[in-house]
Structure formats: structure tokens, C-alpha cells
Image (tube, rainbow, N blue to C red; front, side):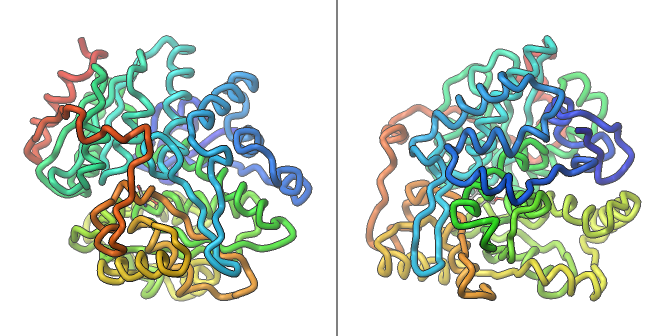
Length: 466
Ligand SMILES: *Cc1c(COP(=O)(O)O)cnc(C)c1O
């Protein structure tokens, strides 16, 4: 299995190098050159397997030839062993053909643990094998940071620097990052938005000399290995609900297009997914795209669902690559135009094809509160604001009431207690492993949105530079 860049001007790599590289050297994103397939028989044989076993079977073709099979199975088993629900990604029924896929049973209570807990272990394994160290740099709107830090803390071959937008994450989110007392963990509170943080990380990666000096590496959703690990829960959920004999639809609250791209990838492997509904908050660049065929960057507005306060959907580039028949020149031209003018458009014939699979839906904060309240009244379940947008999107856009609609619950309600309490009058409690979060001391540095200042900070943090 080899991987190529969506922009066609970076070296072709095998899995372990894609893992360590994150972003491709030409600014593109890595994708498999030839996709594996899951036949109907294979899908049938996956139904009901323990999550870790199913995960190994789904991911094995993607790592083919780079990590020994037994080692990989061991890493995957350790990864999902730290989750605090026996099913790892349990399905909960909300109504007839109306399901919630709970993806918040990992150490930091958001779906990002499902990929990042594996990534931390894969990094450690591959770096030890190669005798190398890396500096991981990442931007977070809240949940990626804590999940990445939790996955990399105390790993000998890794230093990790995470940038979050100062004052724009929830207190629980911030504390989950800043209370980790490991020497290899560094938190920057950047004076800017999440997109500023993301631009800063991209600028560091585009500075070739700096990138090589510190062995920079990324764990953002641009890293292929994250997409790979996220494919697994779509396969687990769909086969549990009757695939391949039955089609399944998913509703995904997304900003970066990462999670929903994993669903698209699962479909490409052969999973019978009939519809993908993309839910956004007021930062609705994706929803506007599905409505109009134009991708137009807007201003970021803070909302109740901060992990989706994004106006640049990095992973969309992977979908574009597929949309344009894997023509890297076409992707380069569109991404270049987007960078210059903040917009690009897709012709109406292609949009018609896109809309046979995708729909977009937006929900503002008031709507989000109403959905949290309604779900609580109907079912007794407390859901977080991101998950509420997913549920609402699925209910509003579903085409076929006979097809199960699975909304992704991407965070535990206790990660956003203020919003949930305001909507329902009930304050969700943190699970036992985080119960003392508000007593733990914090450690972070506030920095201006200035490239040289941030670079100097990262250089000091990185033990590889010493
Ligand atoms: C990160 C995150 C999202 C958005 O994920 P994408 O990678 O943008 O698809 C949604 N909900 C929660 C709780 C998150 O942490």
C-alpha cells in the first residue's frame, strides 16, 4: 500500500512515513494510491466482532508492509482497552430508525480519542523502530488538543506543542490540555481564532528548514492515520445495524470535514452508506457549499459548539481529489484560488452528483439549545451541543424513513456543561476519571499571533533541537 499527495508534487510514501509526515511536502494531503475493498462477505463477517478486532481487520490493508501484524494487533488492542465502555462505540436508539453513535468513551470525552489514542501508540512504535524523535505541532479549537496531549504525554520520542485560540475554548476543554503535568507537553494560548492557530501550524510546516530542524510532525485531522482510524466506527455501526444487507445513513457534526470524510472513505471501501448529512453551526462554510456549489470563506463566529468554529475545512481537499478524478493539477489550481481569493466553485453537473450523497444543514445556538432540550424531554438523554447539531441535521435532511439514520455524538455532555444545563436545567457530571479536573493546576503560555514569536517558543520546547 502506497500513498500519494492530493497535489501530486510530493514523494509517494508508505504508511509509516505518511504517519510521521502528516501534511505532504507540496501542501497536499496523503491518500491511498489504490483503495482496498470490503466485500459483502467480509462485511458480514465483521458484524458483532469486538471493536478492537473489527478495527484490526478494517485497518490492516492500510498499514500493509510497514508494521508487523502482531505488533499492530497489540497496539490496537491496547488503544481500545483504555476506553471506558465495553462496546467502545455504543449505539443508542433515540427513536424508530433514529440512532446515536456515542463516540465519547475515551480519556478526553470526545470522538478524537478514537483516532488519537491509536496515533500516539503508532508514533511511539514507529519512532522507536527507526530510532528517531519528532516534535508534534497542532492547532485545536478545543478537543483535538486534549486528545493529542493525552495520546502523546510522557512518550519518550515525542515533544508536543498545541496552539489553542486564547479564551475561545470551554473551560473543561482548556483544563484538559493545561493540567497535564508532563515535561514533553507545551500549551500555547494564541491571541487569535482557531483558523489563526491552524494557519500558524501550516506556516511552520511550510518553513522547510524549520520543519527539518525540529522533525515537525502533525496529528491534526490532516494526518491520514486519523482518517483511517475513524473509518472503523462507521463500519462497526453500519454492520451492527444490518449492513451489507441494509443501507445506513449518517449525520455528522463537522467543521474540518475530517470525520465525514472518514465516512466517505468507508463508503469507498464498500460500506453501503446511502446518505451523509453534514451538520454545521453558524460557521456554515460546508453547508453553504452543499447549497450553492461555492466554497466561500467567512468570518469565524464563536458558538456553543466551538470545535466546529472553523471556516477552512482542511479535509475537504481529500474529497475534491476524488471529485476531480484524482487530478492533482485540478486540486492544486482550486486550492491555490481558494488561498488567494477565499473562494472556489464547482460546476452544477458535479454538484448534482455531490447532492445524491451529501446534504448540509445549519443550526444556530438557539436552535442547538432547543434540540438539546427536546432530546432530553423525548428520551432522557443529555447530549452536547455538537451532537445536537448532528441529531438535528439527520432528522431534518433524511431522505428515507426506512433507512437507519445514525447521528454521531462527538462529545460527552459534561465537556460543555454550561450549554447543556442552560438547555435542560440538568448539569451533566464529569465521569470519575476527570472528576477532579477543576482542582488540578494549569500550565500554558499566552502568545501574540506572530510567526517568529511562536517559532522561537517551539524551538525552545523541542528537545530534538538541543
Ligand atoms: C473536532 C470535533 C468536531 C468536528 O470534527 P471534524 O474533524 O471537523 O469533522 C465535532 N464535534 C466535536 C465534539 C469535536 O471535538
